[in-house]
Amino acid sequence: MAMAAATGVRCLLPVPSLKSSKPRPSSVTSVKVKLPLGAPVAKFDLREPPYPLDALEPHMSKNTLEFHWGKHHRAYVNNLNAQIENSDLERNSLEEVVKISYNNGNPTPQFNNAGQIWNHDFFWESIKPGGGGAPTGEVAELINKDFGSYENFVKEFKAAGATQFGSGWAWLVLKDGKLAIEKTPNAVTPILWGSIPLLVVDVWEHAYYLDFQNRRPDYLTTFVDNLISWDAVNERLARAKSKVNLGKPNIPEL
Image 1 (cartoon, rainbow, N blue to C red):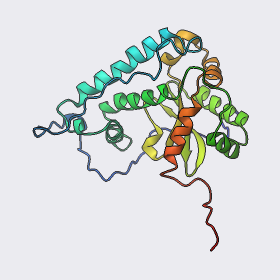
Image 2 (image 1 turned 90 degrees about the vertical axis):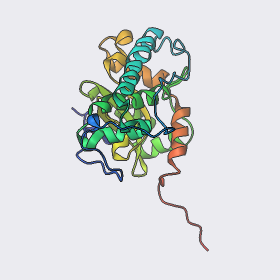
Image 3 (image 1 turned 180 degrees about the horizontal axis):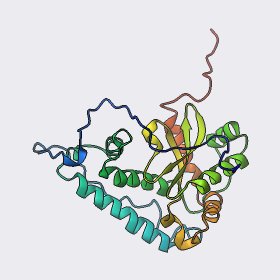
């Protein structure tokens, strides 16, 4: 019970409103359009992980990658391409499709596949061979500032992953200029309410069952100790700083 109430951990379910300047059709599934000749059309591809499928062994097996990326992730891509063919959604980026199909908290059928593609692309780039352990760089400084210590961060991050009921994700995000931990169910992603994701762990069973069976806590420990790409997290943080202010600005005196 104490773990579920860890400071900074929020269980985020689909929220009732998502403001956008773009008008949305009343039924995304029924809108068919005839695109003008030469109009850009999106056909989403299955992006390969940035390492060979056996490169994460023994911490994540090639067998898991072949099923998780090669079958589950591939199915999301194929399904979404079939769903958006000849619809107005063909003109949008993946992130735009995620936000439009979320449909103000009333997801359309396209959302599950679009959200899963976005989350999985982000997940594969959150890990690397020889990863894990304590971070370095600016993210290490922010973790110490916003969580008190790396050990506190690990405790809260693993608690979020362990207590996400059913399928979902645990995230390290930048929110309101501070690091925070969020968890989301199914295909939901924090970009829907303005958080900037920096790190994610997939806690759907297909992410770990072949290697860990039902031992999700062991999978989370392995993820933290041996798989996290802190290089990717620091790169994401650097990009995020162009959009948000971290702490109080240092204004020199005249």
